[in-house]
Length: 348
Image 1 (cartoon, rainbow, N blue to C red):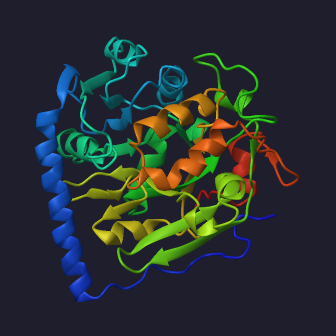
Image 2: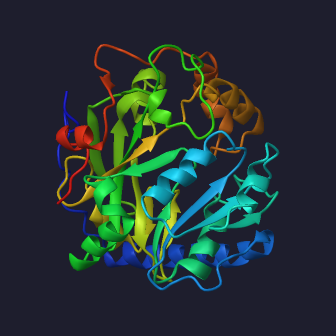
């Protein structure tokens, strides 16, 4: 089973009409204005951004009660050469904020405002990117996302960004790849700081399908484990798996839908899915650690993750039941080289 089964390279990004481009410029300005206003909702806890080097690679994230995942998240990106972390804590009560505030390479802001009303945290992160990210390579990821790419351990983020810049590329796209255990989702044990791939050993190598969205000129990749397991009766409702996490940030940039798409829309052309040409990576998605069923129950009650939360109640109930995601087509994860060999990411 290959990643491009049933789809392949979707081809070049669509050419948008002048009217559509104008509408998207207005939308981008509204998003930038929202980010500018959002600064008033962030309380600085530990601002260590003074003296950031011009070539510093920044990791940007919004977290809530991620004490289980944060230790390895930090160590993973430190090992890749990240220079500084810009993090918004959304009212954690599990010690996450206190732990982050004590890290010398972390700048931390807090807010108790609605995650949903802030465009799922993107208004808050938009301000940090606007204020501190302009001119920097910025890696915007969730606490359960670990970026890998071909040769990552040897090259590091400094080598990758230099290579992208030399090729005239300002964006690295990635496939979000769901990892899951062999057995029920709540089986086994995971300790903070442990490599999640020691527990989450499986993934779906395909099929994945990619197509362009004409309205915003952005890519839409679907498929994989969550669609198979939770949206089999209606695959069109499966999660969006394409992301643009690593960007040489410009003041005019704005994320439109999480990190799935960018404005100006020409930025989206940098990634054409796992079967497309050009450098790309994979975001190892570690959502399904043993705490995931309990978290699903909590998030269903909070109703903060989707525009119409009640529509996703069946999904939350399905995750809460801790199903076994392993099936005949599952692959056992062995490392980034395996993902390159399978065609899920490319060096060039």
